[in-house]
Image (cartoon, rainbow, N blue to C red; front, side, top):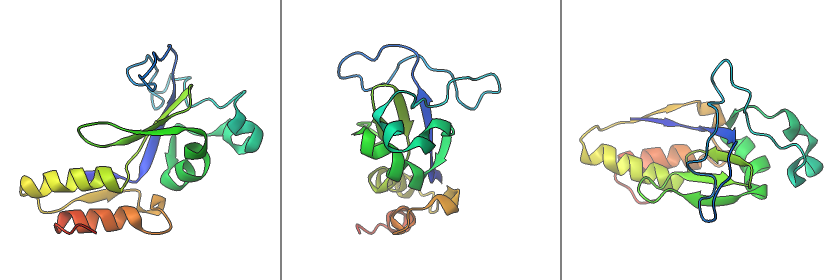
Length: 143
């Protein structure tokens, strides 16, 4: 099972209904060659506090999300996979955390997959929490 240590973001193009938190709202795939819809922080409090956000890429490292996105967003977890996502009213980001990794590695164990691999190890958090979550989950440890 593959587990990414990076995130994806989109600037939504439609209106997010109350309690929808940016889910299921029209957006263009930010990785498509003709896309013009990566996250957009123009005119937000985030760019006033950190001008570097003006040129943010649609795919960013986990550390970037922790330092520059989460402080300006609310964090939600998808109910089944427990995958976290953030939404600040315009920008939607999805990524992995220890909680979602625990769900995925439990599934891998139950399916007798016995191992997992990660994408983008340099995007690991400084405390090693993502890699520790993969290791502990695959080995059935609850730490």
